Length: 457
Ligand SMILES: *Cc1c(COP(=O)(O)O)cnc(C)c1O
Image 1 (cartoon, helix red, strand yellow):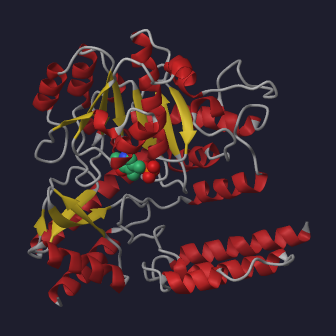
Image 2 (cartoon, rainbow, N blue to C red; image 1 turned 120 degrees about the vertical axis):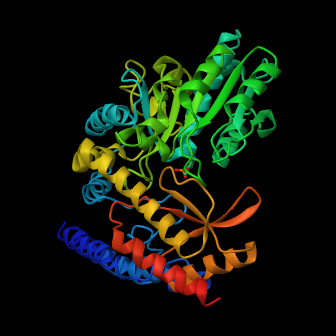
Image 3 (spheres, helix red, strand yellow; image 1 turned 90 degrees about the vertical axis):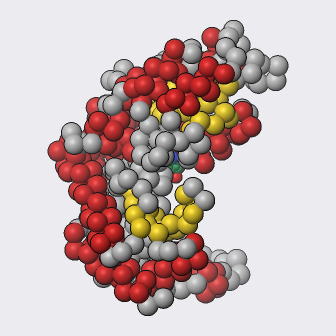
């Protein structure tokens, strides 16, 4: 026992030192893949190694290969950091090794998910009667939401897809914006609907769904089972679909409206940005990440459904030995996973740590800092390609090759980290401000680095 105590103290120190060092550590890893593979590699250990040695070896091997994505000057993808209480709660979840399958395997985890799920719905503007599954990410949330959609729209056509599968089923129309996230396509593949089923809808100037084109596409196709995939937070531009109008259109054609709100749905938590997701409550299912903008450690997201019975019918299973399941649906009845870590604990802790006002401030601050990036880089003479409505900024540095060169130079430099993207056929630097610890100074320091590196090319 004492060994474990010492080990956990040691790991707490390593973690805290790492976090404290994030503000100054180069954001890019110092080691390349080959040297990391060599550090981790070697023959299969023929026998035991003391745990303390294992941990020291692990820290030494991993540290040079860490991308400082938890830090304040990481602006790649849409990656949040990890709030202190949420980080600690996640370590407790691991320490307790609780299985969040149901109320028998972990009453505490189920209660935490219940409370955190209620809070999440309030923050995100989702009806309080909706069901919530705690899944690994928005990919999983989209899969669960679209599985619920598939169940419901085929059920209305007299087809029980859970029992009969898709062979011989009535065709399902899937209508989705052409700037949807690629995970929607993968979810549709996994659900047997296939990416060819997607009827694309044009995007408006900033990447939100074009409502007139949505109306046209919906009107052009046959009546019957219909799923409409909407988006809050275009992964390039941050643009949010007009959910009120789009959900109404979907419903007037008898369709199910699913919202991929991986990061953008958090706009609902801020009185200043809530208008971007106006009508969110009208949708039938929602996916939203906790590990992005809520700054919960990986991996953590919500799959929410307006009809809990549909959600459960699409996802749950039971077995003779599963004491505690099958009466009141909980935990694993809302997810594609069976045994799960108690990831709801960290969500509970994050919401408790910030509270509603702190989460609103987090959203507002990130959006303001994104604006600050856009203004400063435009002022320096570079092209800001999107309308910065949320926390995403697209910057062009001339032609594609030059933009890619700037992105690469920034990543090598290590002051900050931004990714590249292709939007509407052109290459851009993509900046996402999603970390709770990012300050104005971090943005200004990053801008100085970008300007310096772009100027030197
Ligand atoms: C990040 C993202 C996803 C995928 O989320 P994961 O958490 O990586 O599974 C889906 N949709 C959008 C809009 C995203 O930004």
